[in-house]
Structure formats: C-alpha cells, structure tokens
Image 1: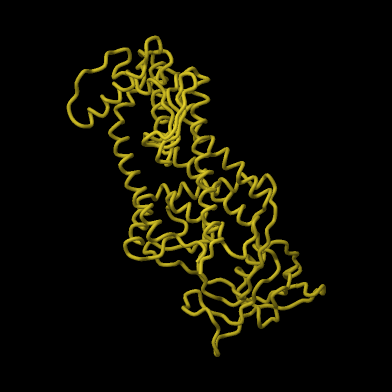
Image 2 (image 1 turned 90 degrees about the vertical axis):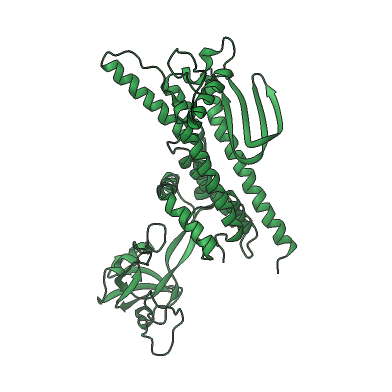
Length: 446
C-alpha cells in the first residue's frame, strides 16, 4: 500500500528534476545569449519553453520570458538567414511548399533587421563567432554535467566492488538455465567446495596480492581447471584455500554491465572459469581525475543510442505495443525522467544522501544527453547551424586559396525543408516516448 509520505516524496522527486531541467535549459540558452550580446548581435527574445507566453519582461532590447510548454527554449537573434544572394535582393515569389519554407525564412530574417541594424545581424558575423554562439548552449550543458558529476563522484562517491565476498553459490548452473535455486543433484560450486564463505576478504591468489575485484574475476576467468590458491582473511586470520575453477558457460557482458546480444537478438555466451562467488559493494569517494572519464562514458553511450536511433525507436514501439519489457538503457522522455526521479525519491529503506545522489546523477546524465543531442548536425539543432557556418568557412577558404571571388554567406534558408522534417520527426519521437513512458515505463526499481 502506498502511503501519503511516499506520494509526497514521489512528487518532490518529480518537482526537483523538473526544476533542474528548467535551470539546465535556461543556462543552455544563456550559453547562446552571452556570446551573442558580446559579439554585438541584437537578441530580441530569451524564452524558456514553447507555445503561449506565461510571463515576460523586457530589459533593454531583449524580452525575457517563460512559455507554457517546458520542452526546450530559444533566443531570437536578428538576421539568422542571409539573402538568397550575397548583397542581392530577396525574391518576391517562389513555387512549391519547400521553396516557400526557405523563402519565408529569408523574409522573416530580413523583417527582423531594423533600420541601421544590418551589421548586427547573426549571418553577418565571422564564421568563428557564429560557431562560438551556437556551441555556447551545448557547452553550458557539458559544464553543468561536469559540476554535477564532480559533486556526485567526489562528494557522495561511487559504488565499487570490493574484494570481500557477499555471496558464495552452493551449486553450478549454466547461464542459460531457467532456474536460480539449487536442487539435489546439482554439482557443488568450486567456491563452496573449497570452503569460501560470505565475509571472506581475498588478499592474494597464488601469492599475488589482490586489491581489486576485477583482478579476482580476471584470474578466475582465465584459469578453468587450474588449481588456484586463495589467501583469504576471515575473522582477522589469514588462511589458504585451494580452488579449482570449472569451465562454465557465462553471458558476455559489455562495458556498462549489459548482456551482449548477437544479430538475431540472442544473448551471447562463452566458456570461462567459474567458482560461484560474488563481491560486496561499497561507496567510495572518487578523485577529480575520475570525473571526465565518467562523463566521456556517458557521452559515448548517448552517442551510441543516437547512431542507432531508428532501431531504438523501433524497439520502444515494439515493447510498447507488444507488451514487452522496455530496455532500461534505451530512449526515455522527460515524462520517463520524471517517473525515475519520483521513484528514487520515494524508495523505502534508502538513506537521504543516496536519494540526493541519485537525483544528481539523473540531472547529470540529462545534461550529457542535451549536450550530445544538440551537436547533431541538423537544423534547427545547434549542430546544424555550426555545420552551416563550417561549410561557409570552407567555401570561403577554398575561394581565397584559388584567388576566386568571395562566395558570400551560405544560404542556410535552403535547409528549411530539412528543418521542417527534423521538427516533425522530433515531434513524433517525443509523442511515442511520452506515450510509452505513460503506459509501459522503464522499470529500474522492480
């Protein structure tokens, strides 16, 4: 039965992560706003959210406000798109839907430039300044992630396996077995046969000192049918126990602890040494040098998801409409993030510091995702504008090297059909993920 306290904690978790998300979005846009103003671009709006305006206030030439749909934010800079030709006049008519999109973008860009403001237009800036402005937003998300993970790893710590045993299996079952409980007739595990017990601390194997669990796992994995002498500390006394790992079928695990699957979706197994022991875990504060590698692991994980986005979306749709369990490492919407935050905050038997560190981890991962996602080189994402600026810089450099006339700014308004398609796809993806997170949420806590 769910208590009133659990409901309050659940809601507080959701509120905490939504506030954190809003601050992250706000700082992302500040990352665009500050360099834009420093470079002299006129910024007419700084908005958190989309849709109808809930609140706004004008300060100087910029209107600051909050809109009804808190799924992003933006700043409006004058002259985002150049004319169709450098120094040329805007075309008065166009044919076709996609041509109209480009033409409308040019017209809106031209209309945003007031009298005497032409030199303050975004497209008039040097390439490197435009890149700095557009990368300012993702850079802020990366900076937020660094701060949050520094607090998490250096302040709270990270769970690590120790060399002390938490469990010793009494029998040997193959990884593909449907059973998890020993039955009469099952072969005894090598660890149990050798006399290992939970609470034993492994200090050496075959005379080699042991300081980390990975060292133990590596020795056992590579020594099937070989006799290994374990030196264990038990109740303050060190004793030697000979252990012979069995050759056993085990699942292949990737760098993030997930079972590797083959092309057909079946789990991959391999034969390795096995003795049937499991380590205890403890939370250890990490040095500053652990922060950036941890963030890089997050970046590569998010990048992998983006590179396999069609398969990821298909998997979400298949699990949602087929009644299957969602992949805990798959895509998730802001609704799903809110649910996870609520579940973390309302977990029973979990101390407050663990809940706080869990919420910090959620926000840190969210900012890593915002950083990576916004670097995708497609408009209207920041990476799309960066790609346009880089293409312009390349064209101008080539023209200069070959003594040709300056080709002028790249007509990025031609990419509006792509922008339209990306917006439609993002809208569809968001709708699918939100629906899936409502009817078939990812289960992190059972």
